[in-house]
Structure formats: structure tokens, C-alpha cells
Length: 451
Image (cartoon, rainbow, N blue to C red):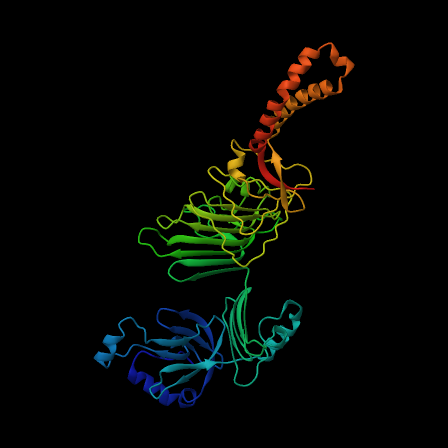
């Protein structure tokens, strides 16, 4: 048969009468070209026909905004009511072509010349998870199921579960599991939520050179592989800040420093936290200021050695309120630096035990501990501590006078030579004893427990 003549209506009708059998049949045709703008394709007949350059694409469905009803058309100026189901054929696809009463061609659908080849290919690639077609690919297809795949490796499966996939990424809604599971499989999950917030999970990716890079690149980790993170940026929308203002930055894993676009090093990011000697950060939380979203008001950092630090350089309050809790803290050493005052209030009793030395320093120590019973030993506070310097001075004077007095009474021969001086010293001993007794109260500082 020669080329179909589609130059005019009368000629088509004439040709249809001359080739009634051809125009009354359905023909297998091979797609040679596709015009995406016009929604047509050029096909070549495989059963002796000719070449058709402008056959409408086969559609699953297509709903265009209504034009006949002005009121309905006015309500859908943004094409929101438009709906479609379109597959754009590839070169070499086999379609079925038929004709209407006037001889105009229409594509009726697609033809499979070797459906079983797909099963064989799927089974042959079972060790690699199949080709996404059937049982070897985990697709348990049964009557009533839907299964779609694009030529660029994207899938939609509606069978015993719903699954959408693109390359290595997939989302599965499985009603067959106990908890009706929704699972997401991907290397990097980037979620935007709310007005401006975002969450990043999996392989850490960033624009390494902002303003230059258009595609995010993996951030190198410390283990020879890309860094792995679970990071949440809670933001609020702002007219002055593109992307919103950051309120809270919360991150776990190999925490990325958003200033350097590298794995965060605690000694570089927060040099004031000198106890964080690790090479990276495993847990990070920062509360930002309301005005700029840049200034750290409160920061909590845990490095890769488990060391933990807090930084709140502008905060004026830090409080624990646990009225019913019993605290049990065990650590190697504790160092507190207070630039103003340190107040400790104990409702019932206080106990400080030191296996080696206990040191209390202060210009006016008595005003610090007053005369409250301070428990330094294992028993109740029953005895006083003495002010050592004052006591030793008074005690030395007392013992010297006491020695002279006793010697005079006993008539020690060694003291006879100095009898006048001895008698004089003995005469002054009573005032010394009186002064020593009166000064004892001023030598007392605090009560302590006896050992």
C-alpha cells in the first residue's frame, strides 16, 4: 500500500472507500518520533501500512479546563481542575492505531510483543534485586494491581502495598505489617516543614561554596566515608532573611559546622569549653537570638570522647528545680569558680568529708560559716575549732608562767638562785590565768565533730 493521503477531507473519504479493510482494522505501529509540544507522535505501520506523522498520543485520561461554561472557566484560571494521566512513548514502542469514520487516526494503546521477556529478565537479575518488574523484585502482582515505571528509573507500585521509588530512594506504605508501617529508604533525606524549618538525615550534604555551588556535595567524615547526621533547623519566616531566621539548631551524629562546612571541631567552634578535647562533635544544641538568628544564647556540646560542655555567655539565670529528687553525683574532681557570691542553704544538715585535706580559706572565715554546727567528721558537731595562732600565743605565755609557779611551790633547787624572780613570776601567774580564760571564747571559731 502507498502512503496515506491526508491532504483533505474528500480525499480521505475517497481513500477510505478504496481501502475499507485497512481503515476498518487495528494496526500495530512502531513509534519513530514524539512531538511533546503538540502531544503527537510519528508512527510506522508494521503490517504493510505507510507512515503517519501526527497521531495523537494515547492517554489514560486528560481533563482540560472547561471553556463552554464561562462561569466554570473563570473559576479555574490557574488550571487547578485540570487532570491527566499521560505516558510519553519512547522510540521503538509498539502502539495500536485505529481510524474513525472520517479516516482520522487514533492511538488506542500499546502492544506487548513479548510480555514473558520481562519475567525472564527479572529472574536473571534476581541477585541484584531484579529489574523492578515481578517476583524477583518483590512485586507480588495480582489481578487489580497497578504497576508503573518510567524510562528514567522511577517506579509506582500499587499492589499488596504502595511504593514509590526513584533509583535508590523509596517510600513504602505497608498495610500488611503489624503496625501498618511507612518506611523511607534513602541516602540523604532532606525535609522542609512549617514556614521555613528543615531537617537533614543520612549523608551530610552542603553547598561547600555558597553563592557558587548549585548542587550540594557530601561533607567528608572522619572515618573515610561521608559524614552521617540527623540535624534539625527550627526556623521562623522573615521578610529580611532569605530562608528564615534560625531559632534552634539540634544535631546528632557527625555534627557539621555550618560556618566551615566541615565536621565540627569543639576546640575551634567553642574554645571556651576547654574540657572538650575530642576531634569532633557527636551531639549539639544551640538556642539562637530572636533578632538575627546568629548569636548563640545557649549551647550544649558533647564531643566524640563523651565530654560534655555548656555555654551561655549572655544568660543571667541557670536553675535546677527538683524539690523531690535525691541527687547522687560521682566524679573525679570538681572545680567551681564564682566571680561574686556563693550561697549554700541546707534545710536539715550538711556533711563534707575529706579523706586527706579539707581547706577553707577566707578573709573572714567565721562570717562564712558563723557558729553553725559544721560536720567535718563522722559524728554530730559537738566540739569547737580553735583559732590556732591566737591560741598558741596565749598558751605559750600561760605555760611559761605555770612552770615558774610550780617550780616556786616545789622549792626546786635549780630555781633557788633566782628565787626573787620566781616569787615575782608566781605573783603574776593569777592575772595570766585569768586573761587566758577570758580569751578562750574569742579563740573559738566553729563547732566540729569529734573523730
